[in-house]
Image (tube, rainbow, N blue to C red; front, side, top):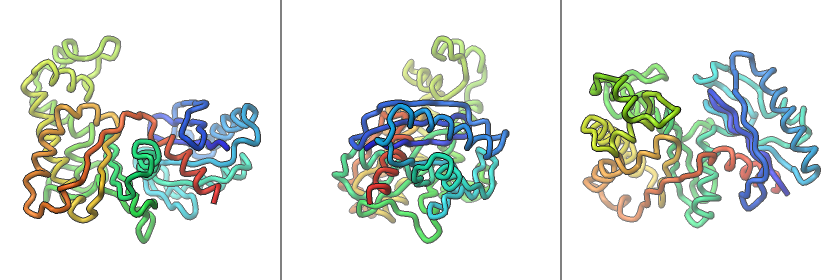
Length: 314
């Protein structure tokens, strides 16, 4: 039996077909184009799913959907997504009706957490905190081998944990959020404060053909010994460690999985992060917790497919 996983992002939407072991059989990607509205978007999903069904027929038994934003998993509704500018959008029900396949929907970070649980950890650790480090910061919780939703289905908003009272402005409208210090937009804002000649910096450190002032460029600069770039990553690691320490104290997970594009700079921010964790006064929760970096760039879509199968087979 095969499952379809859908990862709805603010810029791109990914679809995969995987088997129960998490092996990729097919994949598609397209521009989300949220401004054209949810109805247009769902029809596009329907067309791609129809193509998958022509290829795999009755082997396809379920769809899992991960969406960036506040999701009602019981009703399959995207309550609010700042990145998509959508409010109270029904997605699971209409897609289920269009495709004839049962749909399970969660926040995208929850689906990444499920992917980490199934693929990276092979279900060997049942208490997991996953942080997705991208433009913003998402998080998902697996507690006792089950996805944890909380009272309203919105558990895991670690990106909006306050680490600095009256601190930097966050995209959510609040101040001092973890995301406002460790999301890629915040990292690059800090880099702009310290790196004055942006054009020369990009020319020297950006990968060929991708001449942009972004975290990849900043990582290359750190690797080349650029002092300001290394300072930005040290500060980011310290801030991430501060937020993570509070989460570990509360949740006592066996493993923390970091994923997303920013996690590729692990070499430059992990030492500062671990220093914060190693200097906590209440040290018991930190003694055995493992910090793991996932290199699966499509963990959210894989996790969505596997979660859909998990739900569909019950």
